Amino acid sequence: VSDCGDEEVYEVVDLTEYARRHQWWSRVFGNSSGPIAEKYSVATQLVMGGVTGWCAGYVFQRVGKIAATAVGGGFLLLQIANHSGYVQVDWKKVEKDVNKAKKHLKKKADKAAPEINTFIEEATDFIKRNIVLSSGFVGGFFLGLAS
Image 1 (cartoon, rainbow, N blue to C red):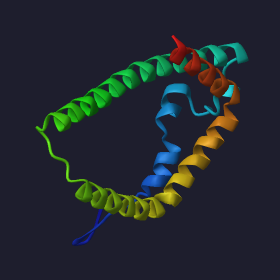
Image 2 (cartoon, one colour):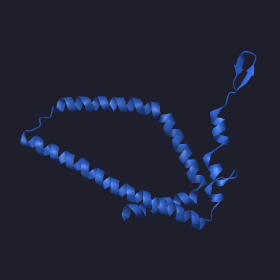
Image 3 (cartoon, rainbow, N blue to C red):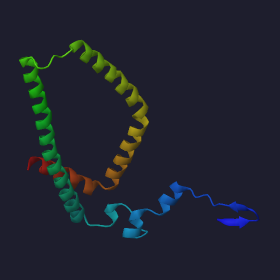
Image 4 (cartoon, rainbow, N blue to C red):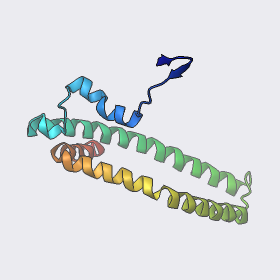
């Protein structure tokens, strides 16, 4: 900010350009930080990918079991309540609401398609640049699911 007579002049900062030049990892790893493949050996990348993949797979497995138990248990309780006469389901209204939700989701999905494609392209680019790390992650993820 500087004063030019009575008017203040402000410098315009392009935040996208600033973010490109001042990424958080360049403070941590230095200005020459690039893809992981340039910094670590193949064995190190496989171990890092495998360990993070195993952790993610293990957590995914546990959360998945809890979610499946909760959804299945809730459905079972609703069925028991329905057959016992505690709950009456208006199936016509359920069908109408489901069709309405389908139309709404289809409309939203059509609008979100470009954003999803951009995300997929970025993820694919990351995987191509760090193929060894990504391979280790996938293997570790499957091991985590199995354990």
